[in-house]
Image 1: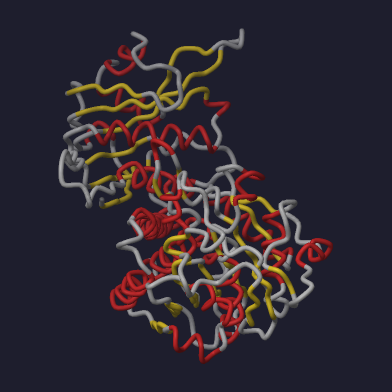
Image 2 (image 1 turned 120 degrees about the vertical axis):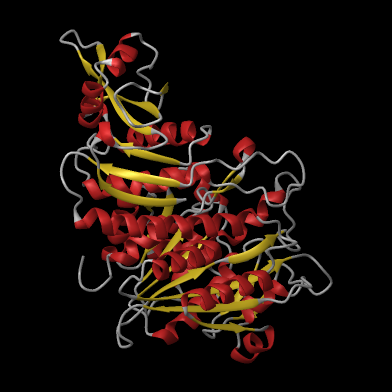
Length: 507
């Protein structure tokens, strides 16, 4: 799908579908009044001699946010169709409702036969959000609605939507440079999200560690990135005992993928993203229950989000340096698999008693975090579907964020708010370290049921004491279950927004 932005004259604009916003103002009695049009809609209605307002007056467009009404061949307009979208009560319009309205418009456009459409409601805005923000949200909503993963189906494939071009109309007034830049960033971010979603949705017999490495190589070739892929022998030689221990039960070869994007001068310190890449997690010897185990193909979502974020940053040519470090492997039972009670030596030299082989993500991440230090990073952020405890704490709305630097935590929280890919900070107090005590090693890999997501982060904190570091637990947000089962591509939007805050010149 191609996107453009420009000033239009609504009545003279030839398009397959002109999308206009409508809203309800409350009466003095506090009830929802008659539906009214945005400024672009009012201009179009005058040219149509009131045909649009007459349609609204008939009550065919509900006040419900995201409801739509399609009009064909409106006299006086060059648009073939007019799609009216309800934004509800304008005084109550916030981010969530604005996004609901965008989803309603996108869903309606999917069912139309038009090849191009123009969104002319950006003057209906959320208080406190810039015009450029609205541009970005429109792109992300449309790309999300039109995303398809059906390449592995052989029957009953739905026909692809006809829509291929979208114009984001500025009316009234000229297009601001900030909006043009945001459009470019949003398209690149949407590309990164789609890339991460597809990696997550692929089954684990296709999306293996080797497949992830091959996809990273393709990105490197496409965007002229630097890449290095470490094999098992390299990890053994380095002393990555924790990472290698997780791979012992699997026939799939582990990979440590290092992908480097350079958009700034070489001396500029990079942001390093470390992504958990467990392409399938059975739990190992500490075997998971069978129910919903198929969803453990999504346990590489941290890795997918890192690749998606680097693809986005490279696509928009962001002026910063960023490195992705991805430990990728399977966690399988087998004759050679690690057992509860085994003790492993990490790359940092610290020893870990493995009390539960299903707490494997922290074992591959701790060695990757130590490895990331060699790049002299400005900050390190790891992303992992790490704990079910985080899902219990925060549900499927917000990711959990932990950090050893409050400024870094604040930056991630702000980036999440800006992208509407939100996270919530949990404590990382030293008090929780006591739960990781081991009688036989420097630490255990689990701390018991209480505060499970916090003790998991506390474990990782032992390997990042020399760095500005944050951990994102995305176990509740990286995919959806049930009827809408599939990868969400989160937290690619958050990571991109966070990285852009570090871009030079300062934004």
